[in-house]
Image (cartoon, rainbow, N blue to C red; front, top):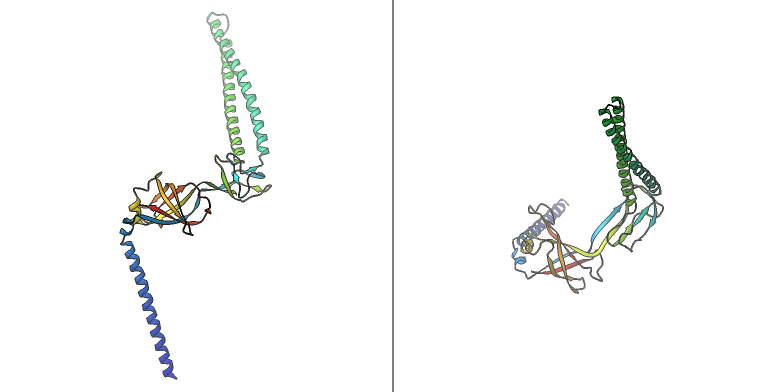
Length: 301
């Protein structure tokens, strides 16, 4: 019985040792293959074309957050719709702010009218002061009257200065309110696709809360990552704004020819990060392609 146990143990250890050696050899061969791949940049350098893969994406994605607090009173575009240029995606109730704004504008209007009166009074006081100086010099009035008139001139000038200061403060308050009202209706200078609305009508929001996710689908882009050898080969062609001719290869093998521009070229000379060499290829949207679909890009060298 002991002999059978010993035999079984020896067989088990032998099999384990053989499996360990084979796995070690497999790992070593994979490392050697990887090293050979890295040591053969001429495969990219001598190629007539290069094929890279990337996700077909909108040109940009915008997460819109609330900048003021309040209740949402209107949503102008739902998910799957195009938000028209200069149209607010959502409108936050700002009736109280608008009331304050109207009140401040009335205050500013009154201050402007008062300023005109104060400027005329100061002008008259200065003329009167000059006349008193002349009369004093001729001996017709006492010095005290001249000093009283000078005090009146200084008082008129200080009142006018205070009016101007009050006007400046009111203008600043009006500008701040107008900015808050504008932020309660976030809009954009180009059409955008509504991917997701995070809030509904009548919900309350506070600054920092997400309102919507908007996509700029006027252009498409694919982020492409290069190996160092391929980057060295393409570095002259890959310049910001440079136009490239390329082909999109779809999963079914269909090939679509297109032209695009190089943007956001990312180069890490120290190669300290993953995907150190890459760029965005920006081009006109392709009908039939789905956002997020992975496609291959064939670029002639």
